[in-house]
Length: 518
Image (cartoon, rainbow, N blue to C red; front, side, top):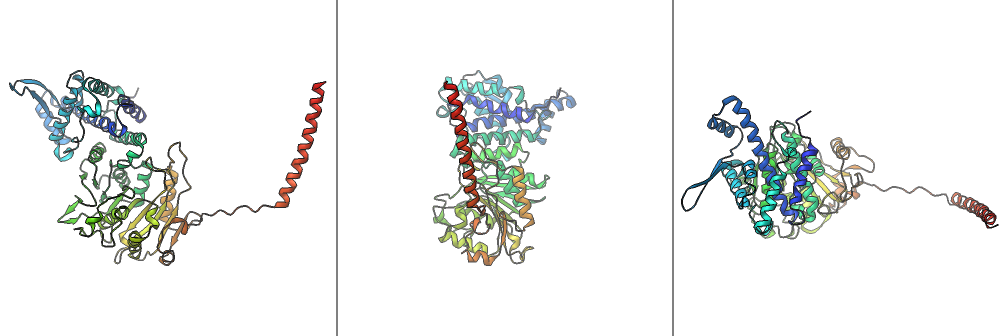
């Protein structure tokens, strides 16, 4: 019998652990407790697995084993709790999940969990600094008064002690743990509804955005609105090897922490994820200039209000030289940042946008026109409605390619490729779904760059100009289906025949009824 744990088993066990909080704590909040505990359990299991392996090699030389583990992986430090008055040592234990499980009945278990997380973070500053600062397992406001809080935390620790959540690398691959993390984030997004928009992009959309961006080995990849990091992970997978560098920015502290843990769980803990406001104070800066990337991908918040328009005119990075978007809609502010953060004559941008970005006028219209006149816009892909847990509106993906600039390798490509994929999806109960076959059709069509009847069209600059630089997909991809011509005379003959048949049936029924009544 195999000792390996199946993906579905670990997913189900992790989701079942949420029962401790359901109905008591809002999903948007309890996701942090579940995901942090999953993270702590996983790194504890890694440590335990490697420790036991090295013990066979080095015997009981604990110091040597710990040093080797710390060089190769990360640090789980020893904690020594002392009486603040007498200085007497009260307790000593390893900063891991198993020490907490042994102490699950302690009256101060919430405080002990916080202490363990604080020590893990301090001992691994380069990878985890600040990751746990927004989570408090001793919070009365979130978890209830002491008695109820202790009971919930005890149940949570016991839930993660199930055999299905034994996450030692000898039993579970890193991919499985990363997939479980994404599975939980997706389920939390479904439960949290509109509150989920800040941290989650559906995996199917992330996969499509990454494939359209086309990252390659050696690339620097950035998501300036990275949420919990799923799109960065998809872009990394698209590379096909480990030779890439990941960068991200996220304005929400709790969501930034999720992204940092997500990178660690996907063995991308060298990723640089910054907690900052991308539009007003970007942290990915070198020598007072924006860092440049080969690939920039994002699903930024749609039509963000109060994004910082009042500061844009004096932007030190000159990102908004094509125009300043309206203060109530930050879509083109994010796009402007992304284009400027891509390498000149080389970088590519793939971004999810609401349809208003395609046709709204005034300042947005002027920026859109300038982007097209600069020959930067490469493709517009219209997607189905209801793909997101946060909104039912249809969205689009814009692809910008700086190789189309003068002097770039694709400067002779002057058209914009439109794909209308809005009608091809699998209907779902709460959300519509893009299957792999739908995604692959979009990607193959984009790469072929040839007109497909009622699906795709390469529009010339003049054609777009005639449409006043409106990028609404139906203007370029005609999906009108002609109705079948109806022969009125033939339809009337069918009606007459049916009426005659109906008269005959009624006569037979009447005759049978008369026989019954006798």
